[in-house]
Amino acid sequence: MKIFPILPLFLGGLLAQTTLFAQPKIAQKPNIILLMADDLGWGDVGFNGNKIIRTPALNQMASDGLVFDRFYAGSAVCSPTRGSCITGRNPYRYGIYFANVGMMKKEEITIAEVAKNIGYKTAHFGKWHLGSLSKTIKDGRRGGNENVYSPPWENGFDTCFSTEQAVPTWNPMKDQSIAGTRYWTGSEKSATENLEGDDSRVMMDRVIPFIQDASKKNTPFLAVVWFHAPHAPVVAGPKYLAMYKSVDENKQHYYGCITAMDEQIGRLREKLKELNLADNTLITFCSDNGPAGEGGGTKQYAGERQQGVTGGFRGRKGVLYEGGLRVPGIIVWPKEIKNGQHTSFPAVTSDYFTTILGIWGLDLPKRPYDGVNLMPVLQGKSAERSGFIGFQIPKQQSIVNQKYKLITNDQKTFELYNLLEDPYEKTDLAAKNPQVVEQMKVSLFQWLESCKKSNQGADYHDDKD
Image 1 (tube, rainbow, N blue to C red):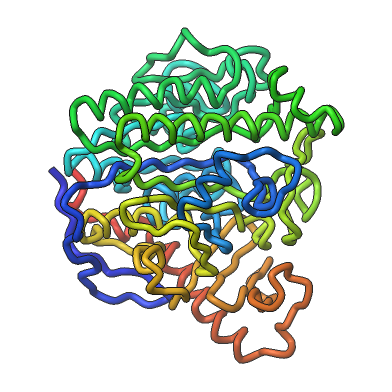
Image 2: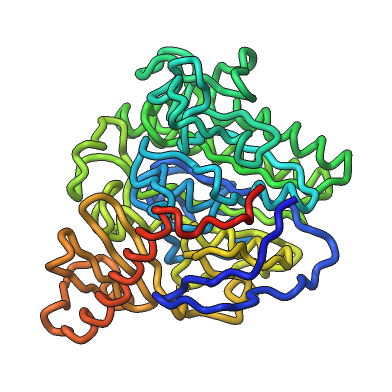
């Protein structure tokens, strides 16, 4: 069993020894479900103002919990954000710089590994994208490469129904633009049945039995559910296409696969109610980055059916402006979180790990973390982030605090935006605020250096069996 000593918490560019969490007040451990869409824009959901795409289940979830008006993906592309969700650390700390780059290192401690140590059943469903899932078969982009083999079942997940990369959102195992992708269930084992129709439904057909089994055994569970929708290949079935006859075919497919995903989220929540699990189940929802498609310097992600919108934020997937990073964000936990809340607190996917360990009453492992405990925010006791959030992709770096964003493409010239007054990043304030720029540059460079040292192995101790 792993021991997790007190860590030096990295927050706001400073390292400080701290016992971060007291024992939780709740007597019963909550079930935890982490939901994530793929390439869903901030403006693609009804609770953020979309009047066309039908997302009734997500809208209800937003009403039942807390909506983050400033929720950030850990990166502007998929793989790094996924890593941040399950480690609480920026992926530059362990070499996942971009999509299909790097792997989840064995020394990293995942939320699933911690959950298993305290008696949870753990499962991963959907897109993994944090390493190959087969040592022998050319699956997806990187399957058959032992050098990047790091499947979910070797990172703390007992039950798996996982793909290495994207699959079509309808008939996921047929007519793939990238041949050979499988749904893997374990070492060199892949699913062969119930793989037709809507991909979100195919996934939920595995999620619900996992939850039912945990319920029968009266065992708390952690389910990480990473939908493929609405990532390309974007395909909607006839039922969902018929819902959007008034728009062109490309939008019909894009809108339809989002509604199909939403329908399965509603199905999940109804099942939790039926099993009397809803009250003490914490559910999160977000996207892994902003919408794909041409615009904001991201032509490599252009596609006729990539019809997502940012809600007016600058840029899209692949850049560190708000449109590439700011995504829909909800947390629901009826037992502990009041419904109908909104917050302007800037939160990020790295906060999941630190928040959940706080709920469990555990100290963080002894290494730098980029997330914070959101429980004071969820309880309405905090509205401002005291530190910053750091972001990196190749050729671009940024930090965001409660008020400002500093962003650079070359670490020599910098742009500064007041996100409270200018959330769409139209007015660069760097020339008028040199002192703010210099202060934030110091924090940015300190953080970049910390990530570099982490990636060189400086954080790894004898705290992982």
